[in-house]
Amino acid sequence: MKHAHAFPAVSDPLTMASAYATGYRDSKKHLHPTAPLDDLRKAFGGDLPAKGQPGEQVIADLIQAAEPGLVGNTQPGFFAWVMGSSHTTGVAADWLTSIWGQNAGIYQCSPAAATAEEIACGWVLDILDLPREASVGITTGATMAGFIGLAAARDEVLRRTGHDFGQDGLQGAPRITVFISDDTHVSNLAALRYLGFGTRNIEPIPTDDQGRLVMRVLADRMALIRGPKIVVATAGHINSGAFDDFNALADLAAEHDAWLHIDAAFGLWARANPSTRAMTTGIERADSWSTDGHKWMQIPFDSGFAIVKNKDAHRRAMDISASYLSEAPEDGRNATHFNPELSRRARGFTVWATLRALGRDGISDMVGNHCNCASLLAYKLEGTQGIVIHNDVVLNQLVLSFDRGRGAQDSDQMTHAMAEALNADGQHFFRTTVWRGRKMLRVSIVSFDTGPQDIQLLARKMKSLWKEICG
Ligand SMILES: Cc1ncc(COP(=O)(O)O)c(C=O)c1O
Image 1: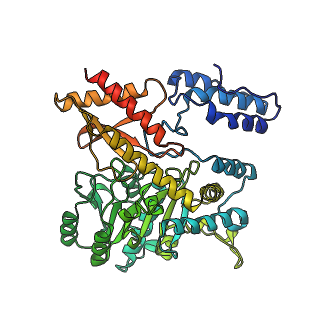
Image 2: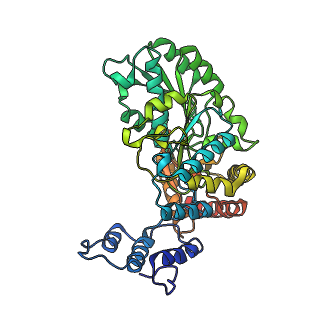
Image 3: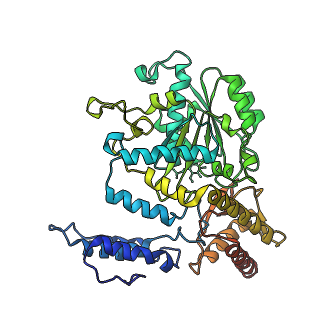
């Protein structure tokens, strides 16, 4: 198997990896894995050698085994999922993170890691214009960020009833009801499960045609159910990109003394651009927010942010302390106050570096560019017979189906065929989803380099393929 980038004649694994890495992005032109699973298993497989191998040989073998199984989500033709493309400055910081080998658990393990994290968290609150007194945990992603926000919620809503979760756990606790959209991202249901909530503790609320909570039903259900309450809402629906009505939600939460958590894995960053910010109005009134760094912000995987307005609730839910981890008054940030981890990667370096490389204006422009690209694609496809856009294109997402007027089943087949056809030359990467019972093609525009010229090309390709396929 030939790798895309020639190895220089070097004799240490670091130089070798760095020389290869600098050419990788330019050489990766085929966005799909080219090797089937069996080949990958063979390439990675074999018994663990009894004796250690030379580092440069290990790295050469790794590249050779991995390359055919890599996905081009760092490329502008990648539209399958909301996945960022790991900004190169962030990647460089990530290399340093590994070279420095810091354990970012507590300040004393790495004052530099703790301080980079502290400053970067402040920047995140600034860009998102969320309450500056909120506390922030840098997580592996939005799933864990949601877990943290909901753990703080669980602790606080029980505390308000007089139940001390720290002492009594869930044993004998009043029953908490979680109100959540029937179209919520699955990660929220997973986080709730990890926290001891089963489906009977969850009140699913119907959504409208864009995936937004139907507020009237939510208000009625909240009025009917007694006891502590948590509401989970969405900024940036996974398919449509839609936003819930945050002011109405905050009013309702206040009326019921409920905790309001917002899953905003990518939608929260709409606040960074003046033309999309209005959709997030009122979001700052929530109690907690989960969002990703590795999606729209292009921070290398893995990176997410758990933001909690009530610092004490956040800390009560997450704190890890022990005598051998003694803290001194002059210490800075201890990540153990905000994250469910002790030893951890120094994730703050990549956050600090990527945000600094982008800058406030760069972040705003990037968000604006991706949203403009989504509108441009909608504009280019509108009026093409048989191409149906199912969402209001308000952010970076489009949900499409392909329909030649022969019923739902035929349309599902056509949509599948279009996804296959779009992927066939390896220049684009698409996946379908099932939404509202129908197969749809999701177009998520979030890769750093995707611009209007890529969208023009895509629209032309889509229209010409559809002409061929619809017969
Ligand atoms: C709306 C929403 N919430 C949560 C998540 C989970 O994020 P992560 O994969 O970073 O854990 C996603 C991921 O796609 C998402 O789109």
